Image (cartoon, rainbow, N blue to C red; front, side):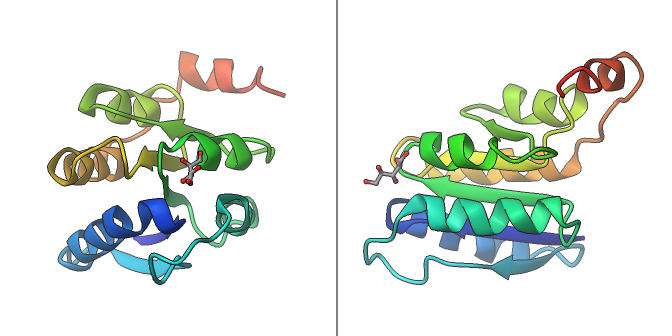
Length: 142
Ligand code: RB5
């Protein structure tokens, strides 16, 4: 599976951890759109680029990380067809896929520790959408 990942400066360290973690999985190929250092970068630039790649169908699932995950998820969710889930625990990461068919996992690099974040990444990428009544609810989004 191809995964697209992006961060701003505040999410850079956690993004690097997530990228290294995913590169250790034979099943995942990772496209990193930056940030490529801790130098300050505006999170909307990254969120816009990643959300557009999801909308175009270039990637099915993505990960966005800023300081809190708030700005990234707010920007990404302005795009029709994007369902970015800001998650802080395993349960919401899992349910965001199973019930909401989330296509972007948003996390806060200043909020969530590396160990929890990597588990959330695994659960998010590994949990299928259940469809059925949940699809009927997604149909009402627009
Ligand atoms: C950057 O200082 C910070 O505002 C940003 O990473 C993010 O948390 C915004 O939502």
